[in-house]
Amino acid sequence: MAITANDFWRLAGERAVRARGEIARRSALAREPRPEGVRAPPLRFLWGELASLRRGAGRRGTSQPALALRPQPVMLLPGFGAHPARMRPLADALRAAGHEVHEWGLGFNLGPSEQNFAFLMRRVGMLARQHQAPVALVGWSLGGLFAREIARRQPDSVSCVITMGTPFSGSLRANNAWRAYQVITGHSVDAPPVECELRGKPPVPTIALWSPRDGVVHPRSAAGWPDERDQAVALRCTHLGFASAPEVSAEIVRQLDRV
Image 1 (cartoon, rainbow, N blue to C red):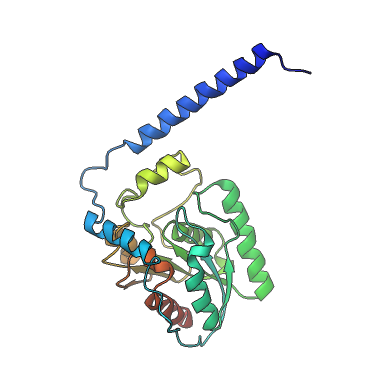
Image 2: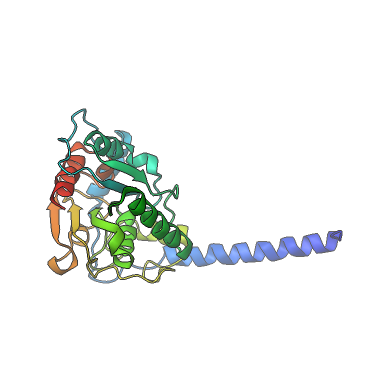
């Protein structure tokens, strides 16, 4: 049935009203205050992140980590707003060490949903069956929260979880990214659209890589407490550098050999 001019303008007006309402709602999310007593990394470290971005998001050295003693399947999960291509230096280093490296299969990480969690659960299970071995999950920032939750839900398919600058401990606002996260996803960091247990340690070996130079996530939030992970390892890279710094890939290879 043909749409009349009146119907067209009525529908356009309704869409405009909804769009204005959504913009106002997300603007309110961006204006929420940080809770009293919750700290984020200092601004000088955040400027350091921007400098590392101009240099290519970290120091990309030519040295490779030692060959893996126990090659295994590994899935890399990118940080919020990042594409798997940003983790290519890490992926290349792990492949050179002998591991079978897989992307997460979802493109840009734009936040959690029941749909993408269901997809990841199926993908991890498929890779575990394909390799006839559990998969090591290596998650950068928000990707580490995905990894911890997948391991909690499906531990038989996961050999270990390695997080890199992941804010799994304390307040989810102890970072310099939560407002951007709320604007882009449209929901509060405290109310994700997926049922999850962020602070409880998954029932697999869990290693937290963190950096005192992190300009995005507070070091305490990324290191966690003993009951929230099995091991915490300090590295001296930027938050963006977790995806490419040679010392990160070398440490991940060492940790995978210990699993």
